[in-house]
Length: 71
Image (tube, rainbow, N blue to C red; front, side, top):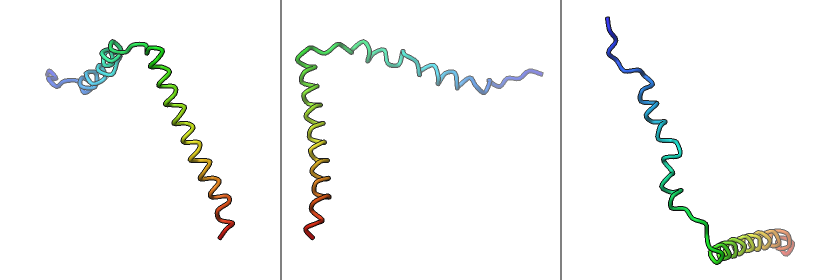
């Protein structure tokens, strides 16, 4: 009596083989170190975003602290 059915984990091995580094190799090949100008622009835009978020948070806190006392 022979068992002609495929093992249950056969499909699992095929699915997990695509989860390795080879899946991201194309992205890694395209990646490069940014130029100094590109890096400065990125840092500047990020800093501006952090300052704006802080200003909005501070304004909200200030309004919630002092505005209700006028009503």
